[in-house]
Picture 1 (cartoon, helix red, strand yellow):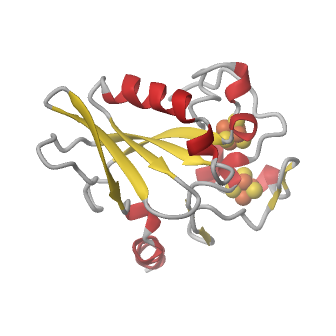
Picture 2 (tube, protein in one colour):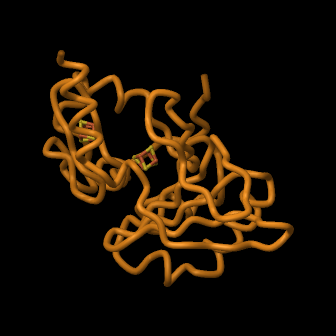
Length: 176
Ligand code: SF4
Ligand code: SF4
């Protein structure tokens, strides 16, 4: 179990950017959770969902500088591992299908472009370790990066967690 190396403080970025799937509530990616007071915290903190209790972004786990707290740098990093019962990760032609991807989520519109150099530094470093990297903007399609024969390549993709149909099906099947 990973251990937090920092504290969230007034950051609430993860209450907006990823999707949230619980038995009681579904929130699509890129919109605020109904329980969030942005920049202040969770209105149901003591009773927040177990999914929220378990979530830690890479900054909280110690990645990057202090200034890269997601609400300050406006992007947030987390890893996804393929659910064996769910859809497979997208893959670039000629690249190996990988089970883990680093998601770089945009917290404020335009942040992925504005922080382009740093975002690409992270992308190259992580993709170089044999991990897929997804840039996920608030609007539009995501971009998948992988090394193919030693060259960093990318393609626009639609990650499965953008498909709320899949997520809603999952909730229904859990309820059933
Ligand atoms: S994005 Fe990271 S630092 Fe910000 S609230 Fe979530 S876990 Fe904490
Ligand atoms: S329930 Fe609370 S911790 Fe969980 S996403 Fe909503 S505001 Fe954030």
